[in-house]
Length: 406
Image 1 (cartoon, rainbow, N blue to C red):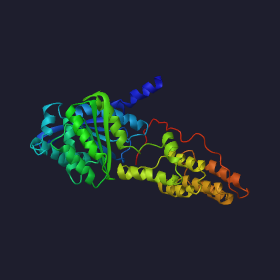
Image 2 (cartoon, one colour):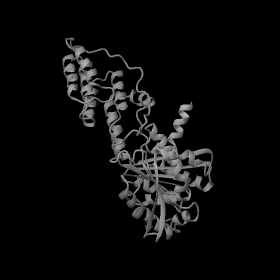
Image 3 (cartoon, helix red, strand yellow):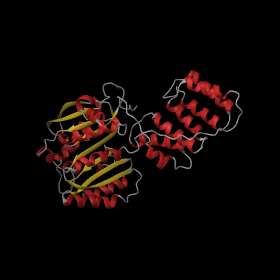
Image 4 (cartoon, one colour):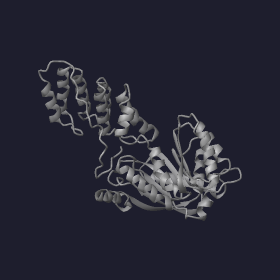
């Protein structure tokens, strides 16, 4: 327990794992200077080619630390990707209300319209030019600012890919307009909103009204979640909603767990290799992160193939491995497994011998595959009875360095 406590302390230490940079812009839209903080992730300096999703936080003064903390914790376990946080300073009070101003028609007006354009035309371009960013952008806010961020969803092509609306104070007809936009949106959009049983009654009523319509929308581009937390107030619900929102948006990013292995993969009749391909295709197309599949996920799929004796699946898995790790022996090993399990010992041995000219990867070494080839020499061709793995996949164990995305 002492070791775990020390690890958790280190994970949430901003000074150790990230850098907070104070920035300011002389805004032409606002005719004023605006300040904000940029929090870069742990690997930003050590991995100079890596790019990151962007999370814009309205009410950045008090939302930056809780968001940063859960992101560090999630990335430590490889459950959440690293990202660049842009925390907009709104001074806790009058500034945030001016920034969120809207008219009787329920649309940004006066100072609110100027702030709306400041975010899209000045803040985001500045961050994109100065920092290494991916096109995947998120925005989050609380009560007044949570309502305001929904205005970006009104556009036909929203500049944000994910919306986190915590206890939103909505403008006129906003719940109806959001539902209409979610039904018609033409690109993948993650939409998360939350309230609590102790929240303001108007917020509970409007978020429920939105949910009553949104939960029945059949638009494949809409990825939607609504939480109602019990025994929390308008302010304390934020602490529960942040991890819920982040794990909702990045659901599927995580390595294959024992639960996913047992409840989803093993229950498939076929398509184990395709499951892995689809998982990383989803991460790239919906979440905007292109990354090499984890070796632990390859091992999980291998275990599923062996448990279900679906040896033909090794062929597709090997093709995928060759694309993802082209200079390594991973695909060679999987093709060798296919021939070995289907009883073609000669071709299996020949395949394993190819490892001599390839790079090791994970726990696959040249000696291991060459020994495997040697053991097959002179064997009669016949299907091999497979020993069923008993302990796969193991839960991932973090190393000192967080998992790197490409």
